[in-house]
Length: 128
Image (cartoon, rainbow, N blue to C red; front, side, top):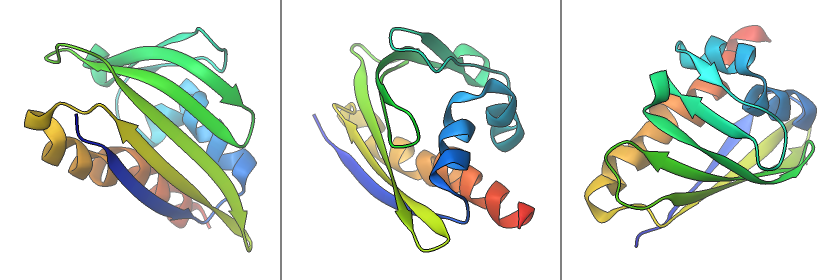
């Protein structure tokens, strides 16, 4: 199964980025849609009205978030690892999305930039 690797520079601290990944109110701000999320290992989440959903597998506060991701049309889950590292006054988020179904690879790769990490990046740019 294909893997997506992307890197996003954020005009925000690692703490602000982590909070934007796990706080449902902030997720709703940058995604523009309903979000359910917790910052607990084993916690379930759902995004975009339940189209994307999964479970938190590993959490290292302000540094790393690992999740099992499911999409309502996929036969098996994928795995998302987001690693946050300080860089200057901001930080960098490295995305590793493993086991993406072949038929969805292009739309998911584009979606990270258009609707998820790219949208979060835009939110932080507008806030500064």
